[in-house]
Image 1 (tube, rainbow, N blue to C red):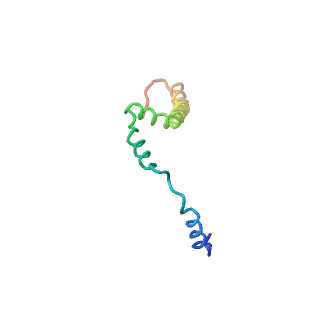
Image 2: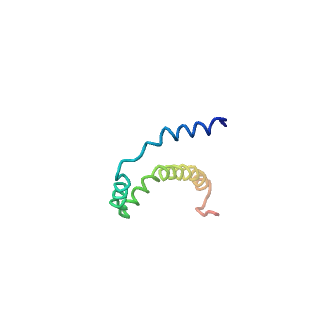
Image 3: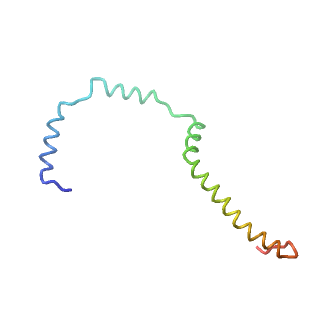
Length: 89
């Protein structure tokens, strides 16, 4: 995507947008808004973070249940076939 006229195009764009400036006092209003904004409480921040991870936690829970069900079939078969309830881990 190399354009041989890129320098000319950028110079023209710079010349056309040179008169555009922020309104007077814009930087002051931005700084006042930044100073007025406060960090959320720890509990609120923790809750927001937890909500972002909720889908991942639900997926992990489903995977754990599926794994537990599939492994319990082998354990049940061992219990049904054995005369004793001793297991070798």
